Length: 257
Image (cartoon, rainbow, N blue to C red; front, side, top):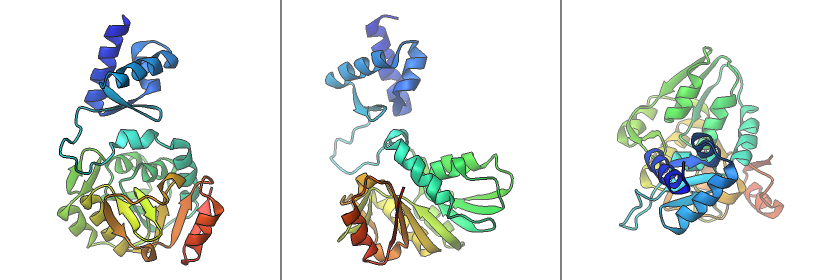
């Protein structure tokens, strides 16, 4: 395959999937990852795609109106992946057999679903990927909210999903977000995501926020929760101690892993 043919193939794959990892493209094209990275650099310079950490994202669906957009799931999945895995490992330590828990539609919650042991448990989720991941674990009862599927987040949102949550109560809700700010609280990329996170927190006894250090100090588009709704934050060691202490002063348990 000539370089020009390979680059056209890469653009087609990225556009079809929304995003793609360097390792996947290297395997598909039969070349090294370094070759793929050079191709992606050239394609980004030409405006054909956008580089992301570990891969590339389509620019085909760019929002010309300038309004807020969710980051595609496949981009979030490969962004800060190592930190998300460590956060998920810590989150699993807070889950006990027999509990009823909620996992949101975040990529970090999907990491939790992947490593969650097969034990007696009820899991309520609006995540398509988390539900599929848990499907092979026979001792875990999985409940899905249904609703309007967000193609970018692969999760159910909207009034139907929110009404479904009204019928349930969970001991623990594991949520992520786009931003954590000391004055503005917890925020999301869209109003629909903010609304369903708010509803999730309402039906839980204990809200555990899963957020890597890059999200602190960030104000995303739509406010989801006040900080008072959060009981525990699990983050990574990239969060400086002064910031962690400022949240502990609000009565929030902060665990850095």
